Length: 108
Image (tube, rainbow, N blue to C red):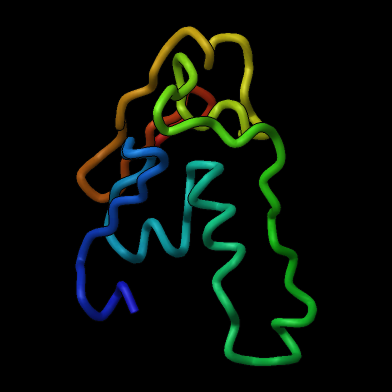
């Protein structure tokens, strides 16, 4: 649906931008762990393929939007999170075509 109404996609988590880029880049090459989890949950129209796909379930503590965690707001559910993620809030880095807000992911 998104590809029919927009050239660019912004993925947000708890009100913070985590990934931004063209539809093709974000949909076909997601970089942020949250975007990857979202994309894994997109239904596949072929019932045989749908039965065999793996959905990436997010574990960890669901943070409060009223009192978000320090540093990266996704860190309590992120499979890549490390100690630095609690200290530093990442910013979008990359290019106009594709940018990601994650200390553990190389945007290039």
